[in-house]
Image (cartoon, rainbow, N blue to C red; front, side):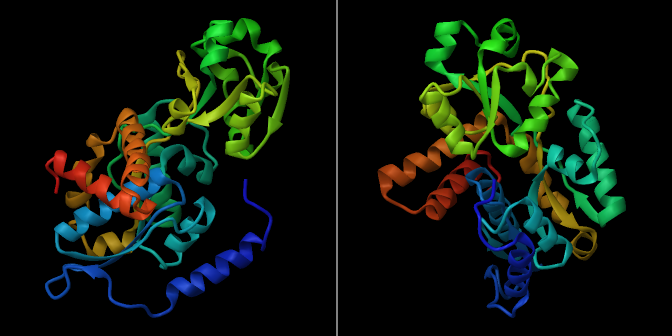
Length: 309
């Protein structure tokens, strides 16, 4: 949920004006560069990690890259891609389906094909290879509540659902309502529902003002904060699988981009993403470095371990 401030349309206009201003040459392999690219990310650490990996791999392969980490939220960054202010960023399949107003099939491969075909036709944007990493919505509770009520999966929660208050960020409500397909429940099945900013939702559970909250499946702070993910034992939530998305005009100019970035996709897993985000937090704490520096160190180490760098 965006904090109050200037209207999003004004923020978008200002952002695009800044991005389109002449700027210094991108860092990287100048002189013998295959070409110049602008690669951006959304605001969260996971998106920044993905973008850093894209940047490192592209630079290794001779591209000059201008990296725009933590650029903007979903709506604004997509507009920046469409308008040519950036060339590429990591997007998620369920977010893409929502943009196209297409319901999920609850089959990750089918959803990927739908967004791939839909974006190519409607926006002239290509989705490169999809990773198995799933950053979809989950339901979470505190370890204390899990032990107290003996609930470790959504199915185990069902007999008590009318006793539990639910919190959720605003954009999570429709995904919880989507559980009607498999579990025959919606947000109205709970004792009550409060829509709160993401962090405040966890605070509500900690203070026992709620017992269940909607959360992100790769949020490393969930286990760090004494919470658990309730197992989605019937696959009721759609998958949010990431992939680099790039304008077709850029891909036509630089046709080797898939060869550079696609080998990364199968290396990216849900468990691995949680560990990478944990590593970023640990390096910040233990080494006293900035978030940006920690992301660079962690992404570099990961790519070297995977023998991609």
